[in-house]
Length: 403
Image (cartoon, rainbow, N blue to C red; front, side, top):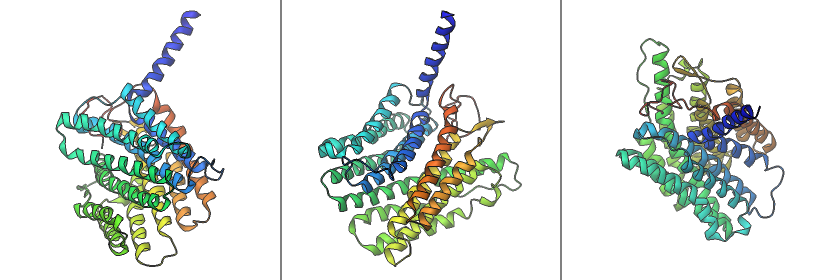
């Protein structure tokens, strides 16, 4: 009896240890829980320690939810970029603790000195950048250093936003929120602009579609226009900072016309990627137009299409692949995936069309992420099948493409 109990305890401890074998496990779970907590707490009211609840909400949606998702994706894809072993164990535990400490610091911003608050916010991103840089430099995968630069920019933006929040400089804080949204939009355009066509092209070939042809990747001009918009964000000039997002949106929509979206309707994992990415040009276009001409929708509401719609949709779709079942060398969406994603997409529509009804859009958002969290739980323990985001092979070769 004692021996049986000891064996069960050993298995349980082993399962807990396996939780730290893959970056997507703690970080995608953290992103999902943050997505729920950040919105669910809004109607309940926030304690006085939280300075400017609106900016706290924006900060946690971007740097809490978005930051965990970016870390989970990049560290999961890192072995396919470098051929190195995946980040796991103590470094992953340390990174996750830094993310958690940043959430605690932001929630208690009123009780912390501005330098301490800024350092707490930036530490997670700086650690993430260091983990990425170490493997990228060792493998000489120099083009991937662009992602490291974006992470460092996020670290600086996070620190500057928290410092402005602690000093009561709310107008400055809002500008940093807008800048952070553009940085995440650039990351989504670069990652999604490669990942969505790649998975689409692979699925079309595996499904035996006659005349399957290469699916176009992100046009360079779109990325350049978005970077220029980011650079002009601080100028306060409405014409360039409004016109460039509109140009970027048009380029992205033109780019998406070659994705053959109508042919993948039977594959929920791909449908979610296509529909999540669609909010990126829609949000950029409306955010740009709102700066140039009066619209029924405000600039803030348009930006929610980028955060709730594009970021939420793409994170749900990409993280959902990590929780998917492996069937005959491919991935299959598990029960609840389609309904969970539909709730996220509907929450975005309600937020855009009925901005005064925050309770309904928030409830849909939280319910969608609750469904996701419940479906993710079985994938958090046990041996890790690699590549994680692609079902091409269920063995462990590190150079198998993740994205």
